[in-house]
Length: 276
Image 1 (cartoon, rainbow, N blue to C red):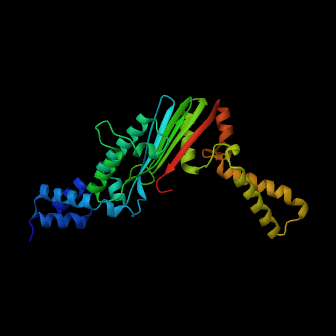
Image 2 (image 1 turned 180 degrees about the vertical axis):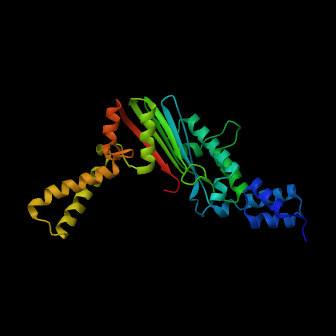
Image 3 (image 1 turned 90 degrees about the vertical axis):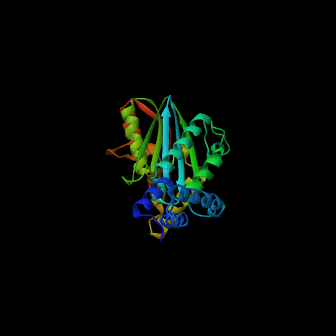
C-alpha cells in the first residue's frame, strides 16, 4: 500500500491541476513521494499533449485590460471548470492578456505566433500548460477596441469561477459611469452589432423574407404586409443592435437615448462569453 493520504492527493491536485485518478496513480508509482509524483504527472502530461488536440475546450475565462483609450479582451479555454478556477490557469491567462496588450493584437493568431519576453513562444506556454493540467488549453479569441474612452467590464456567471463574460465599450463624451452601465447592459443582453448600419445587407434581406413568409402563413391581409414586415424587421434590430435595445436599467429608453441624455456616444464594443 502506497504511503499517501487524501490530503496528499488534494495537495498534489492543487499543485498540478491534474485529475484525481491521475494523481492517485502517480502517487502510487512514486510510493508517496510528492515531488516524484509531480514529475511523473509532468512527464505523462507532455506525452499526452498531442492526444488532447481533438478534445473540446469549452470552459475557461475571459480577461480584459483597458487603459488610455484602448481595451483588449481575450478568451482562454480549457476542458473543465476545475482547471478554469485554478491559480495556474488564471496566471497563464494573465500572461496571454499581457502579451496581447503588448502586441496591440486584434486576433488570436497574432498572439499564438508571438514570443514572450522570457524567450518562450506563446505556443510553448500553452503546451506547458497542457502538460501541467492534463487538459487541452486554447487561446480562442482576442479583440481590441479603441476610442476616446474605453471601459472594460467582467462578469462572473458563477461566483466560484473566474469571469465568463467580458465586455469592452468605447465612448465619446459623457463620463465613465454611463459607459460602465452600457458595458453591463452589453454583458446581459448580448447585442451583435453597434448600429443597424452594421447589420449585413443579406441578413436584413433574409429577415424581410422570413417576415413576409411568416405573415403570409398567418393569413395576414395583403395590404398590411409592408407594415407587418417593417415592424418585424425593426423588431430584429431592437433585439440585436446595441443602440436600439431597451436599456437594462430603464426599459422605457433605448441605449442610444440613455447615451444621448448623458452627452455620450458609443463608438464600438466587443463581447465574449466563454464557449459562445
